[in-house]
Amino acid sequence: MLIKNISILSGHDLDFVPSTDIRIQGNKFKKIQPNIKQNTTEESLDCQGLLMIPGLINAHTHIGDSVGKDISLNDTVDEKIHPVSGAKSKILQNTSDDTIIDFMKSTCRSMVRKGITTFVDFREGGLDGVLLLKKAMSGISLRSVILGRTEFYQDTKAIRANTSFPSTKSAELLGLLQKCDGIGISGANENSTSVLKYYSKTSKLRAIHCAETKQSVARSKKITKISETARALILKPDFLVHMTHASETDLRLASRKTRGIVICPRANSALAEGIPNIKLMLKSGCTLALGTDNIMINSPDMWREMDFIWKATMGTYKKRIDAKEILKMATVNGGKVLDKNIGTIASGKIADCIFLDKHALDIEPMHNPHASIVHRASESAIKAVMMGGDIVHGNI
Image (cartoon, rainbow, N blue to C red; front, side, top):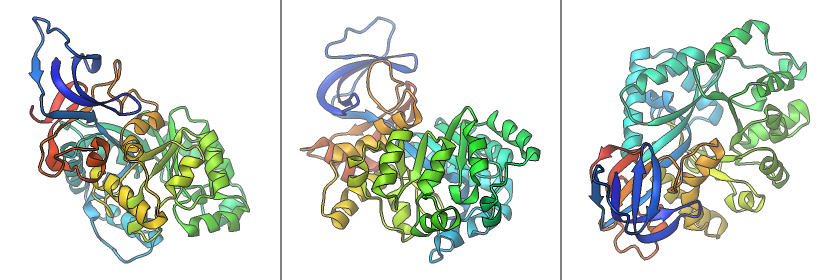
């Protein structure tokens, strides 16, 4: 496929290129330059008036919770989403598999229409939970990174005693990892040091929630005398999720020991936990990706997430985060954190992208393309979504 006369946000720095041509071969961007001559066998599309940006990467979700939208709005974090006692776990236990699948499928379709081409799901429910999500995705063109977990959580007594991962669970974990992309751990406060070390030996992706609430940070210190971040890093995670209440020392440690942090500002705010200090995170050398988190709390909408960061950080800290940096969190940095060949429009990268109408009512005129995308664009500006070189939504 040859795409002619299109504006793009190019490369790792999302540089604005007013007009160029792109050849897509197989599932990748093959060549990007002006005036590419059409081969006699390839389809050619004139995309004058369109802007191509990388497909959005929603780097943290819990889409199994789609059935519980806006339940327990005024409860505490633990009352809402604690993996054992929270409303979420009770809802999932009392909902049929077919109903859970139906609502997960709806969420996947919603993400595609919003320009999300990859999502990362922390999937509860053990192997059965992973298989439910895979069934829900059947027939939907959307790239998933599924991080499963065994339903094994330890109490304070077991953590202080440093109780080991039970041998009876080893085969279950092995079977789980054969069907998903890695493990997504609920948090250090539900696992002993011995268990975190056991998980650290798994060969696939590893990630963990960390420092999401002031209470979880304090609980770690109370139980173990060690910071929650230091304990989470025993897992040797590829990335951490949240870090809303991490100290500068913990952030610097995370920047050295992981590929990055996935922040979820709208979810943190909806749970009355504040928002992450993005300026401090960037100053500490952290690579930041972006996620929408729990569907009970949030819609899986990366446009809203970017717009929220743009405004909430200015309102809270009186310091603007550069719009290009925010857009990187939703695209380029997601690819870096996952260590996958996605998130960037460049030769050799997987051809996941969004075609935006530059003349859409909400964004024309685009005096600053990055700002227009971050705080003005929405699903309504999307003409088409491409994944792996194929149009999966809309048309050009």
